[in-house]
Length: 169
Image (cartoon, rainbow, N blue to C red; front, side):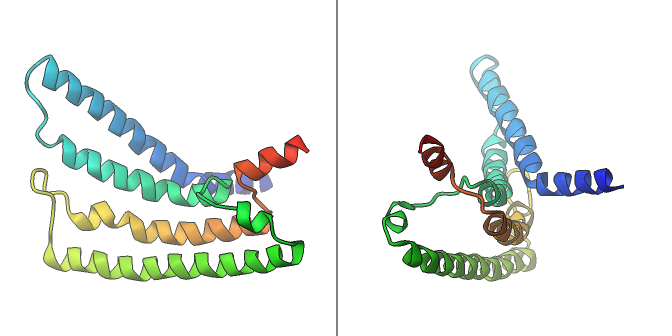
């Protein structure tokens, strides 16, 4: 029973990576096909840019939580690492508060943003993909980012740079 539960948790924990990976594969295949059709068959896909842009939005938002969870987010740690240990602990708390406030603010703003797209019914010009569908991933992504951030704090996930530095010592 516990193996099934651990597997379910593992699948949920990596769902964002799976979604980003599948969409990245779609983006690569479509871009490659677009080049072939444009230069070999002289018949470009006029809709390709819309799909590529939508794929990039989904890849970035889908993978953002995973970046927190794995310690691969952008961080400038050099200044904090030069501070005394007690100040570093205070800075960790300040950084956590700032991260939660910023992601919370973006979450709230994205709800309003998506509501505008839903009310206006705006969509892409060629394929008529609703912008609410393209950018709707943001709402889910901000929740994933917050959960992943707390997971990384609780589990003590270090950035790759800190991992490399501690393994060389």
